[in-house]
Length: 371
Image (cartoon, rainbow, N blue to C red; front, side):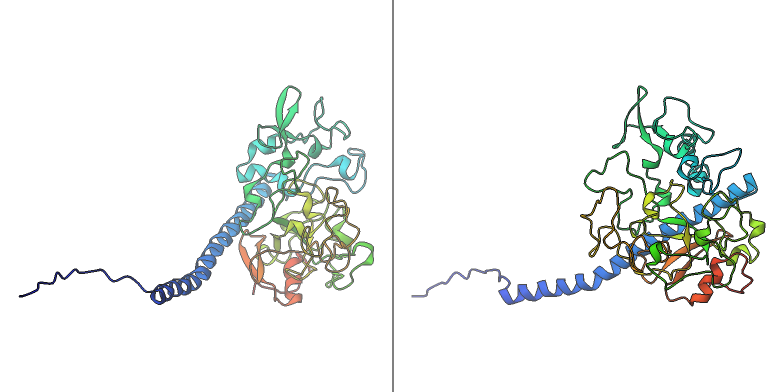
């Protein structure tokens, strides 16, 4: 008798070893591709950051074309017959506040009562002429509130995208657990350069980089009502610089650069604050600072008011001024700057110190070119 056997074909499955090999191969491929993807993303963010600086540089030129001068920080160092109030009582906002019309933020600019606010004041405790504190815009965004029968938002609470670098991993306005708080100020990753200025530290807590190495910026922190004692293209107060005063050439002089606002107690005050943006080239690029909320920073000491007396001083402290009010970024190896001619360049954190100071000064007479 012939026995017929039915041959049933069966599909062979992967063994456990084969599956593990495939998973390992995929893991290796992901490991190889991920850095490339992250690098591409950072390149895109860095380009966007550069474009922001380019827009700001062009805005400076448009402002200068209109007013025949560059914008100043709007406060008085000393009283005058025209403006007897000083410091925050006379505040008219920062240089970036004056540039708003030139970066397509006309409505935000129009919300600032530069000529004095009309009652009812949004901040009755401040004079009507302190326009920074009296500025508001109609809004229903988080952080808005009722005022005079309308829903409004403080102008300094509004985040301006052009003033934020996409690489920055921090918050866009200073906050803790209550992100919508209307008193929190919107931040900026860009600040004006006071150049190779004398930079006394807070409480003499740091003496590494006193500044003024060429003798063209002897006034501490650029606290001058004129440009005679100011190294950079901008001062800290009411001096209105002109391109003609940039003796070393616009293409060789830093106008503005990147900052990390959580690493300086003044930068932390935001894009609009009259006393926020002054920044010197005195500190090396990306000098290490223990920033707000970072390991080593004692955020349990009055974090809302930021009066942190525990570790804010010292050369790595966030409120020592000498190194904290320096240019910094989260780009690997350096930071981006916009020069007086509106060109943008990436400067390495290993740049020769003297060359960096020469690029910061507008009238030091030291030949310097972008490396």
